[in-house]
Image (cartoon, rainbow, N blue to C red; front, side, top):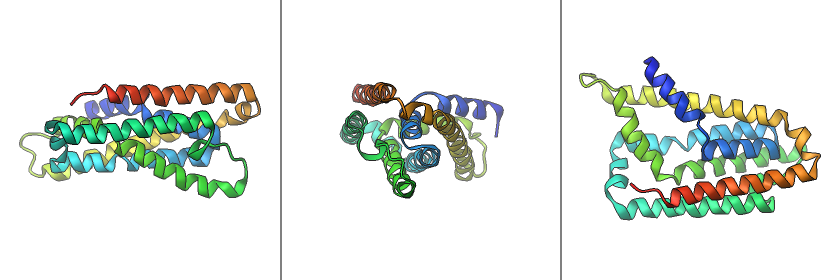
Length: 205
């Protein structure tokens, strides 16, 4: 692990994006445990993109306009659906303070987080360009090296997202007891998901 790889990965992971926004939303609406589940789900959602980059499948998205557009528009529709759910306070972002609901919420949160990351074709293309930069030309086992880098990136993703989530969850009790604050948060998260959907819609290969 080089310092440049770790610093670059940290910047990429910590930058606000769909995964960070979803983790924060879950933390403020559902609490600490589901926020960690969101971080875990977002991390799992990276796996297909990592594998695509290592197996060369990401190159298909880069060269095929149809494949890229199909996955992109699925992602756009899903992000807009998430915006609607946030605004309506339904689905994985619905507030439920009952202890018995924690397990069910965590399962739903993980699935939603995985789908959010899987349906973003830019991630596959990003890793196609990102990982090979840190593999030496004379590396005897390039695939093993990429797996090692991928594991480090995923561990960093989970750690940073979990920290985001736990910090936001610590503020949850001060937020959910204030209806006006919750209404503002719902609108903010809905606008955030809609903006990310619009950004993805405008994305090009």
